[in-house]
Image (spheres, rainbow, N blue to C red):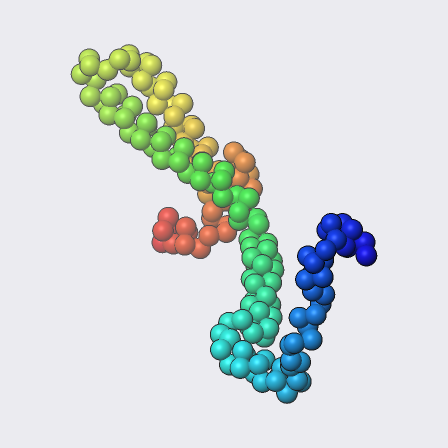
Length: 163
């Protein structure tokens, strides 16, 4: 009766149906039908979406993550040395070029140099000392931030330099 009052009464309230009455017209799906549907859906399902593939891929990714942390840990001493060694090797290359340039200017002595003989000789001596220090640091270590020199840790370096 409250519906009739809220709707203003009359025939409109009587026409409304029970909201769950449609369920009585549906048929129940049997257990055998449910299993047949599952089997048919699995037949059309790609192999990549099966649980064993996900488990295998997860195990593989986990192994790769662990390996990417554990394997490089063996080379930490080399990695720590890499930056200073590269820097000193580049400095050694620059100093070798500077020494050759200053030597050429000192030998030519054609008057076109911006430096006098004494200045050239002093600069050459300075660059030679710096070159020997950088070379010793790269080869032997213990200077310029290099802990272990290339002579002690790199067989290929020794073959190229001394072989």
